[in-house]
Amino acid sequence: IRILGIEGTAWAASAAVYDSATDDVFIESDAYQPDSGGIHPREAAEHMHDAIPRVVETTLEHARETYDGPAGEAPVDAVAFSRGPGLGPCLRIVGTAARALSQALEVPLVGVNHMVAHLEIGRHSSGFDSPVCLNASGANAHLLAYRNGRYRVLGETMDTGVGNAIDKFTRHVGWSHPGGPKVEAAAEDGEYVDLPYVVKGMDFSFSGIMSAAKQAYDDGVSASEASGGSSDERSESDGVPVEDICFALQENIFGMLTEVAERALSLTGSDELVLGGGVGQNERLREMLAEMCAQRGAEFHAPKPRFLRDNAGMIAVLGAKMYEAGDTLAIEESRVDPNYRPDQVPVTWRSDEPE
Ligand code: ATP
Image 1 (spheres, rainbow, N blue to C red):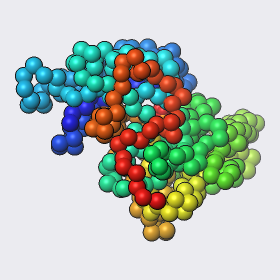
Image 2 (tube, rainbow, N blue to C red; image 1 turned 120 degrees about the horizontal axis):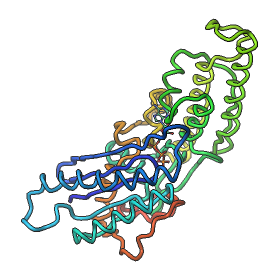
Image 3 (cartoon, helix red, strand yellow; image 1 turned 180 degrees about the vertical axis):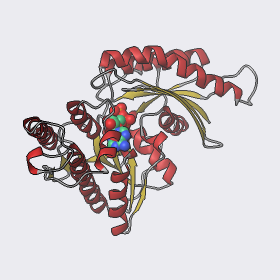
Image 4 (cartoon, rainbow, N blue to C red; image 1 turned 60 degrees about the vertical axis):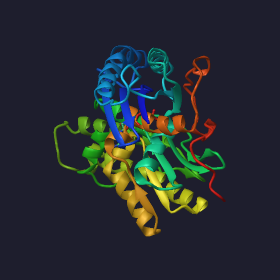
């Protein structure tokens, strides 16, 4: 089976071809990089408008070049696209492109939930049967496990997504988007400082720690202004160095995710954990999760970075499973959904495991 996937929920305009016979995934992406600040929905949609036709064209060319079926037939079996969750103006462009392409190629359309794709790519590359999944992405943060035909949300953020929380802090500090990799780099030279840690049952919250981090940074700036500014030396009166704030942000935020991931493993009795989402590129988060899993005799899998951040490869891979299960969409039912939750998706491509 060969599927052309299209992704464009927020910043990545991306298209891919997945071939299930060889397990090859060809991905072509074009990232939106804001001039200043975070992701602006209108600018992101303008980016999709420019970039989606381009990445789709390149991908289609690849599909044609690698196709060895009968002449005159479409080089893919279906077109899969991310229906949501994501920014409405971006999703509508992706939806329009996918519908047009499926009609032009005369192949079915498959509507993929972006968050389920983030977790399914880890299940696919790990070969795990029924893992607990931690999705740590820009706009989301949740733990999911499959039960009776759905991915159930076992725990989630009570406020913002984990990447967005980190990006808000870096925006405050004046660092360019995306902030996650900059916090990771700065944390290497940091030491622990006290910041809030909030886990309530199976849920976690990032708003308190982000406000405290911004406050600690502002206190540091005003302290250093008061002392004349330029000293690099650490002293009480200079306030908290930004490296220390970054270090503590990582320890606490990833600690919260790891604690709830452990509880989810214990609750479900599963001994497999997979990671998904752009924040999953962070080495410290992976280290904490791997250590926790090792301690309880569970297996841990993180997909390669190109499958962690937003990418159309994961859309095409899940699209292939859905297509095989006959889970295609009629054009008139193919509206996008900016608030599409993973637990709304009937999981048609897995057989129910016994309890
Ligand atoms: P969603 O999938 O929820 O729609 P998204 O579209 O924002 O999220 P992702 O690609 O999953 O996209 O994640 C992007 C986020 O990952 C950004 O917030 C970015 O700061 C964060 N990120 C990227 N690299 C790292 C890193 N090394 N450490 C921490 N965070 C990172």
